[in-house]
Image 1 (tube, rainbow, N blue to C red):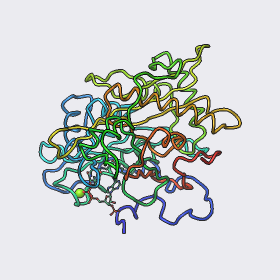
Image 2: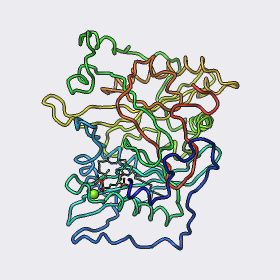
Image 3: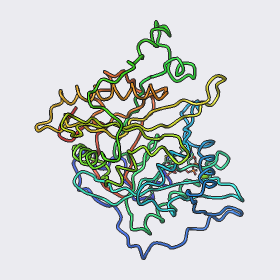
Length: 401
Ligand code: YNC
Ligand code: MG
């Protein structure tokens, strides 16, 4: 039915199934036609608010709302626990706008939130000034009252007022219409704990001791020249990443400020580290490879022994081995496996329990060999107000893998 989504400028199921379509915006509007005030909430005691996340107290309010009410798995065993440092990182990148941190207060308490951050995105050949919408949440007691469409329309209005007409967002649920669909893969680092919290099953005919041995990793990394990324690497990493992302159909276009923000560990304002980035520097001082992962904990909802699972999420990476002409899938596979094997070692060293990755970019080249297993979650990617041909998850546009 999609009572709300059928009114929005998004693609319909069945569209662009058979033959390629011309890509571009669905609905074209002018800023002067966009209302300058939000639609009234129409409920006594509930008000729109713009959150100021530079204020510790307001950041904390968003943190608390998400911590109690944000995304859970289907069986309600785990719930994402975004730290205040990760929220600062995710919600205040270069060009961030306070007006795009939108809340609803009922009396004094924050009971709903939605956000957007600016992103320059490239869809196949076209560069688009867009936004990325994330962290939509409604307090559990206010669910199923059609507040989500109200939040979505308000963030759309605020984007439109800034001349932003396209947006990207992801969800576990199916809406009209995914631009791409990926699967989550998980690689146990602390198998015993993952088993105790009910995340990893004990396969039939296996024993805990066998599983623990299966997922053990060496103490030391093995790639020569691997070291932590530093400020002086930003330019080299930006150019390497740009050339690498050029192989894919839907990507961000990062300025050097973006690379610095998204990849360089500044050790958070509150002290806990969000992002881990490593480069490989060769004998000629050239940066030939890099990889990164970020930290996102999940609360374990009902467990005596464990409160949180500490997960590393594979973020951006690139390697010169994948940039030869013609593309050399074998060499790329060998190099990516070496890099990801080292990423697992580092994640283990920093006490992560699990390493997660999606079936995108060239991840298909290492997931199996590095002992990742498919999860039951899918992640759908959506592009708002844009007509496009489907993007295959984890498929390189020139080299089907
Ligand atoms: C969702 N995740 O289909 P229809 S992801 C989009 N994304 O509409 P109600 C969603 N739409 O089917 P509730 C959605 N979830 O009738 C539901 N919907 O057309 C649609 N969960 O609204 C749904 N966070 O208020 C239906 O539902 C309508 O009270 C129903 O609220 C939903 O952040 C929600 O999973 C998700 O807090 C807020 O369940 C609530 O249930 C909740 O009756 C736990 O809503 C946390 C959670 C979602 C994480 C995320 C990305 C959000 C993207 C939103 C779309 C942005 C479009 C681009 C806008 C900018 C454009 C420009 C320029
Ligand atoms: Mg609702």
